[in-house]
Structures are given as C-alpha cells and as structure tokens.
Amino acid sequence: AAVFSGVESHPFGYIAGQEPLVTAIPIPGTTYVAGMSAFLNITYTFVGQVMIPTFIAEMENPKDFPKALWAVTIAEVVIYTICGAVVYHFVGNQYVTAPAFGSLTQTYKIVAFSFAVPTIIFLGALYSNVAARFVFFRLFRESRHRHSNTIVGWGVWVALVAATWILAWIIGEVIPFFSDMLSLMSSLFGAFVDFIFWAMAYLTLYPGKSKWDGPLRSAETLVNYFFILLGAYITIAGTYTSVESIIESYQAQAVGSPFTCASNAL
Image (cartoon, rainbow, N blue to C red; front, side):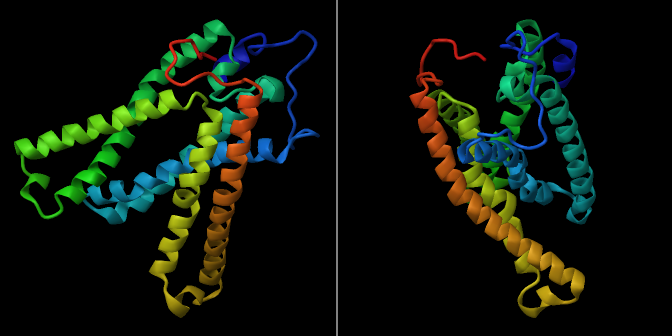
C-alpha cells in the first residue's frame, strides 16, 4: 500500500481540486470520538504482545528472548512509522481508510490485497494456534495427552483450532465494520494487554521497596504506574468512544448488514 500510494496518480475517491490534506495535528473540527478512535486503531497494533509469554515458554533458553524482543520492536516501530507516514503523505485526511488498502485506486487495491492475503492467513493461524494452545494446556495440565501422540489429544487440538477459526469467521460476519471493531477490541482487550498487564508484571518483579531502589528504578516504576492509569483511561474512554462511533456510523448508514452476501468491499 505504501508503494502503490506513491505510484498512483491520486487516491481512491479523489475529487478534482481537493488535494490530499496532510497535517501534523488534527484538523479543526475533529471530534473527541474521531480522535480517540484513531488513537485506538494505533494502539491495537501492539496487541500482539499477548503472545509473548507463549513464545518465551517455547524457547530453549528463555533468557535470550529480550534480544528477539528488542529486534522485533525496533523493526516494528520503524516499519509501522515509515509505511504509515508514506501512505498518509500521499492519501491525506480526506481519502484515508481502514485498512489503508482501501485508499488505493481499483487496480492497485486488488494487487495490494493479493499481497495481504498470505499475511492475513499467517496471522490468523498464529493467533489461532496461541489461543488453542492456551486452552489445550489448561485442559490437559497433568495429562499424557498434553505431550503424547494420542487420538484424544490430537482430536481436541484439531477441534480447538477449528473452533477458533469458526468463531473468528462468525465475529467477522456479525460485525460489518472494521475500524470501529478495532477500536472496540483495543479498548476492551488491548488496553490491558498493551499497558496494564506488563506494568503489573513489572511491579510483581520488584515488590515492596525494591521498586524504588535508585533513581533509574524509581523512574521505571513511575512509568509503569503511568501505564496502568493510561490503560484504565483507554478502557473507559475508549469503550465509550467506540460505542459512540459505531452509533454514528449506523446513523450515517456507513455500515452494511451482518451475514449478507452483498459486497462490502472498500
């Protein structure tokens, strides 16, 4: 999408004479609901942190995980920043959509989505695997089915994976909007996973007075307390703005219907 947005002559939905408007701050008239929804869409990109404990548990030497975490986080921030900035530069406020592929003209949009399909399948398989693994390990915590090739073990595993995919499909069909769904998921779940969970983990590692042991540790403690407050704020305010945004979208007739065969393509 980043490459195609720069190659195409104009974004999808372009109106002659109305060039893409790019601003460093929200344009005048931006409502709290719109601004918060945009912020929630950004914070949702970090929801993948929920899989970190699973990855650590699978490593031969879990102490090596910080190296991978640093590498992935740096790459993630750089790629997300560059791609987002490039697309926004060529698309602007008026023509940007979620997902960003919708801002491309028809030919480029089709090609961009074809590149996205493998990634979508991979991510779906990854999240499905992690969720199924969590349930599977809880069901067979002390059972031989957990680590042996048994019919029961494989049967339950296949059923769990299938159930996650079916549930994801139902959610995708029941909820006929994308951006507001991300905002709602970010406020209900992402705020805890992105901020509160890790801040509480830090406070667990440094209980009592140890969290104030020295200037650096004290600064880290204050930052983590801030993350807890930020997560709580996102949960409360984010849920409110997400619901308001959904109501506004329905009032503007900007969403389709659940379980419909009509095209809802961007």
